[in-house]
Image 1: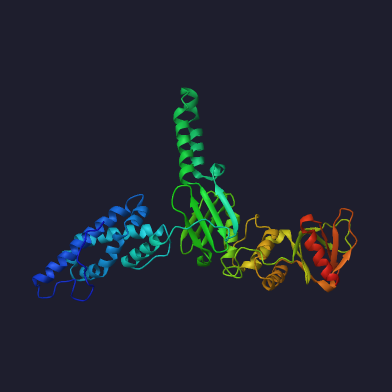
Image 2: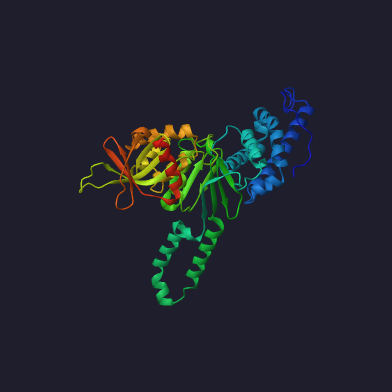
Length: 415
């Protein structure tokens, strides 16, 4: 803990000796320097520890003392830099280390040491995030464990090491060192590289197996704040916090859903609960009403609403995604299906859902028929129901889970 010291008022002429070199000004400057040296030494010692976050939360007076002394020390170094070289060197080392520690929270830099220390104090004083409760629906959840071991670069390093030392193992018959190294790598991976993540409509939270949880607000993520390496199972997010989710089995899906929910019309407008209930989403196939025997039907998804029926091609999922997020976004992974995007559209309000449905139909080259023009045809031999208009039709695959909603919507068409 920092030693008790007289409070130094940061005003002009109070922290530096007067120009006539009076003894009181020299003593006051020496006292400020001594306080700064002691405070900086304590902060450097705490920040260099691997447990620096826990120590600084347990001893918040270090940061408070540094912030209290900051105006006086800054003014003193301006006027007495030549006589405070030791303090200046400590300050430079503290600034480098404090910026490094701040980067573990956020990549957004600050201008001065005082701002860095103030930002650290704010972040360390915030309560640790908690996993979503029952009142916060989860959009995507993933757990990283030993099953994702193959996506860890350390595994491949060990494999190459084993291959290059195969001759020695066969000749001398001593596999114990290699087994020890392999066990140590697995233990390190399990303790340091595994965890769990939750994605909700408002935040992404990452809970490592050992260490402090961290979360980032979706509203704070910028256009270039998401980067992903799906092959390695890694997603990096930069917003009001910096998060790296490692070895995730749904890395591509997570990155795409983050890109979807960080912007309009989702951000700030949804809570994770479906709000569009009067809808039926079914597998469907599009083809001209008079299908030639050699023509193959196009698979997709049928969306039935009280006022219309729509068809979205399954292979145009990227166009549907860009119709919701904008043309400048990256191409989503194959895990982002049209059915999944429609389910997330159901989180919007009903008017917004209908507006976005028309947009994605146009973006993907789908079909949209108003309820008063939809005609139903005879059921096919395979149990599919035929609907269509304007010379184009689609066959719907009956779904027991959607039967009630489908019947209710079709009856409203007939009425």
